[in-house]
Length: 78
Image (cartoon, rainbow, N blue to C red; front, top):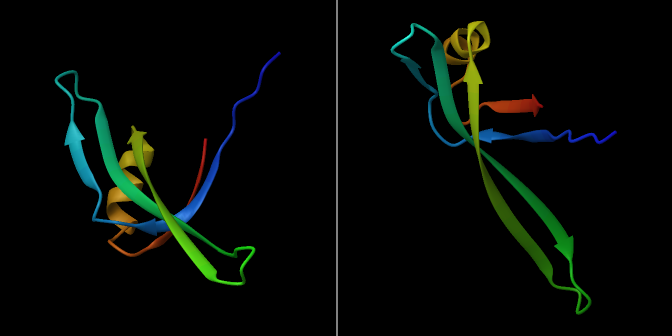
């Protein structure tokens, strides 16, 4: 048995965009930026950002559009 699970904790890069498919299903997409900070071997502070595209369907898409705005801190589990 295999398991793939991810937790993304970051900030929204833009307001979520709610759309409706031709079959009537609602879908929202938004970007989340995560960053990490560390000190390298020479003692310099390093920082790196990663960007994640997230797609949410159904009732969760409506809720995300209602409560999320650019810059909001979000925790995505999937």
